Amino acid sequence: MMNRLVIIGVGLIGGSLALALKAAGKVNVVVGTGRNEDNLKLAESLGIVDEWTTDAREAVKDADVVVLAVPMGAYESVLATIGPVLKQGAIVTDAGSTKQYALTAAQVLPEGVHFVAGHPLAGTEKSGAGAAFDSLYQDHLCILTAGKDTNEDALAVVEQMWQDVGAKVLKMDAKEHDDLLASVSHLPHFAAFALVNAVRHQKTDTFDPFAFAAGGFRDFTRIASSSPTMWRDIAIANRQAMLKQLENFQVELNAMKQALENEDADYLLQQFSSAKNARDEWLRSKGQGEEP
Amino acid sequence: MMNRLVIIGVGLIGGSLALALKAAGKVNVVVGTGRNEDNLKLAESLGIVDEWTTDAREAVKDADVVVLAVPMGAYESVLATIGPVLKQGAIVTDAGSTKQYALTAAQVLPEGVHFVAGHPLAGTEKSGAGAAFDSLYQDHLCILTAGKDTNEDALAVVEQMWQDVGAKVLKMDAKEHDDLLASVSHLPHFAAFALVNAVRHQKTDTFDPFAFAAGGFRDFTRIASSSPTMWRDIAIANRQAMLKQLENFQVELNAMKQALENEDADYLLQQFSSAKNARDEWLRSKGQGEEP
Image (cartoon, rainbow over all chains, first blue to last red; front, side, top):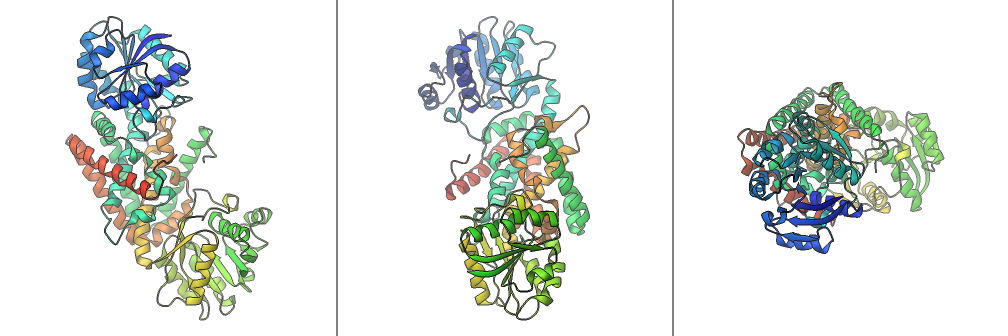
């Protein structure tokens, strides 16, 4: 049971965590903070937070646990702001998508404040407190990237917090996390944004491809409706891994394009089949063979 | 009311059309044909077809309307096979994704047999008679690409058939159709297949990115579970338009990669925002602002 939990950035991620902890009866008081007053008022009216203030220093001063759920571009300034007023023994954790960056940014925190880097693998393309719901983390993975400097007691508190909201906690190295996520999360977002732009640039008064887009396009591009700010920050924070993934993707696209130029139907069939088999196998392994 | 309708290829597309016409009471007898006897038996047991035979010539000999719903790579051989036995005045139509190719392939049909090229913009990633359902075309677009040689009466019959199953019929030029679909349908499929392969090639005994894939990856890659044969044929049949779309996509990816190399966060934010806005606007225009 946590006494005083502070959520910095009460959006989909932070808000859903607060709602789930409250639903499970695992927290006493939730304090929300952020720059957007309307969003904080909404969070209070939805029962996500018990108290709120736009002053992050005021919010965190008696905190037991602080969850950083803002775009990663704000990490440095937020951590520098709150560091000096956190009490000794306070735990700071985050939910950002790239972990080497988070660990580096957290070095600004003072001695006696414990940082635990976390990443729940859950989300939707929606943003803001209004998008939060208490079952977001149920049965999803949450990765904690503990290193040799991580305080064991703080790690246990954060692990328990995620288990309390139904997540399955996995611990791994920060670089491994960043490489893995670049391939199955960050690259698809890049590709979806690029594809929508490729279509957008062709639109004229008399030629509107969007008018002919159907369900396949909708699902393929769903993640292109995600928060641009969040994804800018993820891309920059994980740029080395992202660049490598973009190169891998370009190699595949180039090979398929070359095959198309050569009318090499056999190569295309082989590539399409391998992709379908890999994806179908993945769905089966997750017990989702019958996706909707 | 059609008397004798023949479906060549009783899968998701052909089977759903038959089910919908039967549900609407708009067809007397549906005959199924194809190479897979088990699939045809399944189609009969599901009430999709009244009769079936694996002999396409036998199936079509008294047909009023023949719907070609096989992968486009089979068009030439199927049309050459059935052409000589079709009765005068018979109507042949198709549901393939590229229309210039369909019109060219249909030139093998004899005088007095009327070909109408069609493309219903509906589907799922599933294949086979078991995937068919009678509401597949409800409120979806169906494009008919009539040219100056198209028989007006035959066109009216095919238009009525699609309206009878709830589709909104739109007529346009075959090249325009192929260019439009290359951008919002064929390119996303290529990109989804390529991305799954890029991830697949990185998998090792100790590094399995698929284990960390979540909802975004599932939706982005859903279309990579589509029929590889069908997509090989579409790619080859529409290769000029596809090559142009792949180039457009590569331009976008390259520009974003360049920005990442230069740590140009502003450019990335602008590109991500433009893509999100274009997609959100598209969803609103379709009345799907609140997608699931």
